Image (cartoon, rainbow, N blue to C red; front, side, top):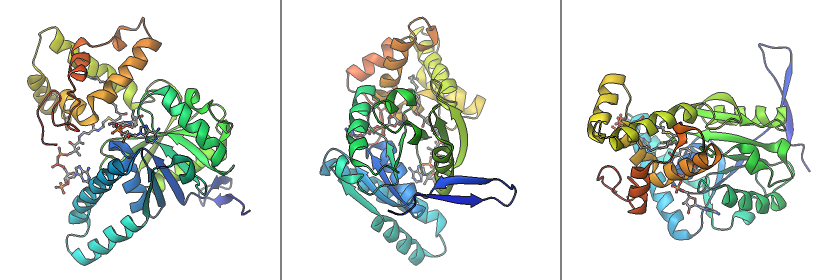
Length: 310
Ligand SMILES: CCCCCCCCCCCCCC(=O)CC(=O)SCCNC(=O)CCNC(=O)[C@H](O)C(C)(C)COP(=O)(O)OP(=O)(O)OC[C@H]1O[C@@H](n2cnc3c(N)ncnc32)[C@H](O)[C@@H]1OP(=O)(O)O
Ligand SMILES: NC(=O)C1=CN([C@@H]2O[C@H](COP(=O)(O)OP(=O)(O)OC[C@H]3O[C@@H](n4cnc5c(N)ncnc54)[C@H](O)[C@@H]3O)[C@@H](O)[C@H]2O)C=CC1
């Protein structure tokens, strides 16, 4: 078997950094995030297998990727449309799909999980993948809110487990939070950092604390916005306008909730309100729960706090 690690010598330091070479990537989940991660990984030269529950979902994911790639090439290859076409075709050739997660990891270097925000479902998936993936493969979760360690314990590879938390829309958002648990080896962490950079992202290092960096600050802000509406202090429209024009945010909190998906937001809040019952920042929102119960899940279904085009 080939040696999975290489020594990288950095010119600015005499020390050498051990890390594995990541070429073959498996993304589990082809929804909003999985499709975005798959697109950018394939666009940056990686061989990608994107996995979801059935072919219909995967066809939609591929169609969304094709649409997003067109937006990217329109800018990047504005003067060279033929090169743009060749780029799109190369990217799509590097992107395979599979409905069998276990089969998809047999030759993988890195698994990135981007399925529903539910601890039990994630653990069940990783436990199955752990038996099938090569010993050298690194596992990462894109969870928004679940501690990485709680997911990682479903496997026998805690030293090869970490978090890669991307932001929506992945092709546009430049950040990836790279999370290590105490057991994550330096090799694994360095490989995850290098992979994030190889995808063209800026990486920040995070410990395995609730919400990492961005969501630990973003969630209380967004929850206070919905509580303002619940208290009758302002409308979603006025809050969104205020935060865009007064604070310079590209989207207001309600537009962003529709963009992220109200179901995902509720999964996050269900988890945090159970875990931190005494913290008022994470108390449930009756309004969010009502919208989710009515099936108003945001842009993905055409209606959330706003009616949008699907
Ligand atoms: C209030 C209710 C409370 C509920 C409580 C909730 C609990 C908390 C939930 C927390 C959720 C956390 C989720 C998570 O883990 C982390 C996240 O991802 S948080 C989300 C982070 N993302 C953002 O904050 C996005 C903010 N928005 C923007 O940056 C911009 O609006 C955006 C880039 C999306 C779009 O730009 P905009 O100017 O608004 O629109 P355009 O359509 O003109 O696009 C501009 C430019 O960008 C190109 N583009 C856009 N999307 C894509 C894409 N998917 N693929 C490729 N290209 C894209 C577009 O083509 C435009 O290009 P031009 O050349 O400029 O025309
Ligand atoms: N929506 C957002 O803005 C962000 C979400 N996240 C996180 O990313 C993860 C995915 O979120 P989204 O992409 O928004 O969700 P989504 O609902 O758009 O997609 C999830 C996909 O996973 C698939 N899936 C579910 N169980 C599966 C399984 N066992 N095997 C294979 N596929 C399975 C579903 O069919 C669906 O297509 C969640 O953990 C979420 O918290 C992280 C950053 C931003």
